[in-house]
Length: 146
Image (cartoon, rainbow, N blue to C red; front, side, top):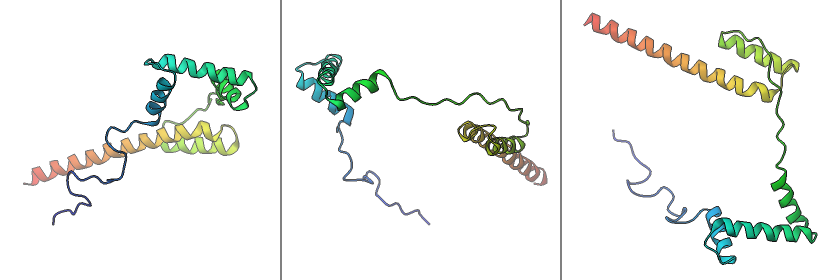
């Protein structure tokens, strides 16, 4: 039985989607800036834009002031201290210890999440290796029987 496709080959799944050649928002903004300031250079247009923003901020425009402040001092991203846990080599036991550390407050969820994700990936890779080995063993067994 042949698989039914929702769309014919060569037919778009989203015919009213973004037209070919349409520019993304950043390119459209840069183009508008270059046109507004009468230049072909992106760097020149951006510099003139920021000079206007700074001038407006100096005159008390709080939105412009906020833009300048964000540019000068980006938002603070908290960083957790390094974890000092003695984890077992067995992935399931290591995951259990990480969960216990987060539950007890010894570490934060933000610290534990990426480590658990890595352990999950490791377990999937091990599972794949085991399945591959089992498949090879079955193929070898069938070859010997034939």
